[in-house]
Amino acid sequence: MATKTKFQAIRGTRDLLPPETALWNRVEQTAHEVFGTFGFGEIRPPIFELTDLFSRSVGAETDIVDKEMYTFRDNPDGNTGLEDRHDDLRRSYERHAGRDEESLYLASVHNFVNDIRRKLEAREIVSNPALEMSLRNLKKSLADYDSSEFRPDLKPALRKQVLMSEIRLQVESFSFGEEISLRPEATASVCRAYIENNMQQLPQPVKLYYMGPMFRRERPQKGRYRQFYQIGAEVLGGSDAPAIDAEVIEMVMTFFDRLELQGVQLDINSIGHSADNCRRAYVEKLKAALENVKDKLGPDSQRRIETNPLRVLDSKLESEQGIIATLPRIADHLCEDCATHYAAVKHQLEMRGVIYRENWRLVRGLDYYMRTTFEITAQGLGSQNAVCGGGRYDGLVELLGGPPTKGIGFAIGEDRLILSLQESGKAPAQQGRDVYIAWMGERAHATAIRAAKDLRKAGFSVELPPVEQKFGKALGQADKLGAKYALILGDNEVSEGLWTLKTLADGSQAKFTEPDLLVHLKKQL
Ligand code: ATP
Ligand code: MG
Image (cartoon, rainbow, N blue to C red; front, side, top):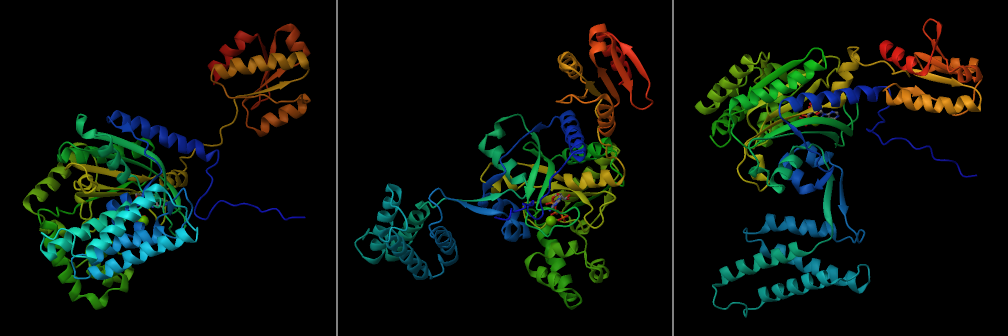
């Protein structure tokens, strides 16, 4: 006999179950309500996008894109073994072009063409007209490159340049299915949607919020999962008025307040502006300061001095804290515009009664992030205590091919938000039924079905057992389900038209006509 496989949820994923899901629903409902009062509309972008969207926006050098994304090839023809070769080839153009290394690139292109031909002959891949045409064009350009007959009017260097870009375009024209990733976050999708749906033509700014699952292959632990949920919002277009930054922050804080989230701490900072050079100048100073203390830092931070010095400030290493405290602070290096903006954001927060703490170590590693950054922590979460991260990203929409567009947003970690609410006892108890209908006999069953319909229509939660039970057993069942009332329907009740309602908490009983029963329950519940 075959042993049965016992399936388990994939590592880092989990089932959300009742009664906990009631809390999830309450949190999400509150988000709909609060964000709605701030004029935000809901967007539901897809859960997967082209990998390139994320590598461009989140950053190819970040942990998220580098090692945490769930990526797959969406290829209707199955895996032909050519997809990765094709991707490598496209990337190798960037590496070799313009560096007198064209011959290396061209050799790879020749190999690629030969591989396709071999696979076609061996019938490992099926030919199609698009593939034939791409192959034909590419072969022709490769031949032109080697002969002198193509555009003899051009100087040799220019001629090669023209042909190289032809070859590159033809390499691009091959299609082996797209590389797709499950979204690790949603800001990129929202910006893509803003551009794709021409939302710059709507009244600006456009205010959008989303909620849903995100995917990152991280080491699972409390408050850190591979499928987790975010609730986020973005303000796109319009101006970068400090009041927008403050209102976005006010909105998250109002949401947390409405949920009675405990121990909420808002940290803010300004990271300057890369285009105004204040950040660049600061990063240079920071780098120089870090070089001086390099041997006192751990290997991660040492590496980051070169790759991303700002992120050294993020370090949680105990041994580095003393050194980091001595480093130059960006607030002292902001240009006049950025300093004015930051001061105005703080003033605007004060006008809104939002309490904040300035945290000069709060940074973002990517160029398109600028000025306002913020993070919110809550209690009961141990070291995974950040429930919300946000900031201004005026360069992102443009980076994704859209018009210059101001942007600011945040993402709340819903799993952690829920954990914190549960830790502080804000979770609702199991929701019992209002009424359990204990019926006996065929006639009573018909009445019970009608009663259940009427009670549910009036909004009560009703349990109607599918098969007849002895009254004693039915009452026991009602108790287990946490029902408040048992409605007893037997032959007597049906013929008299008087129904017995038993209050399970104290065992008291009373008789009601059908309309009186509804009135009575509405008063009680
Ligand atoms: P952390 O430093 O905790 O890893 P992050 O900087 O990666 O957070 P963001 O990308 O800014 O987080 O996402 C915003 C919020 O989403 C975080 O503050 C956190 O609450 C939540 N979050 C991020 N990654 C996870 C995860 N793997 N599991 C659960 N929640 C997460
Ligand atoms: Mg992270």
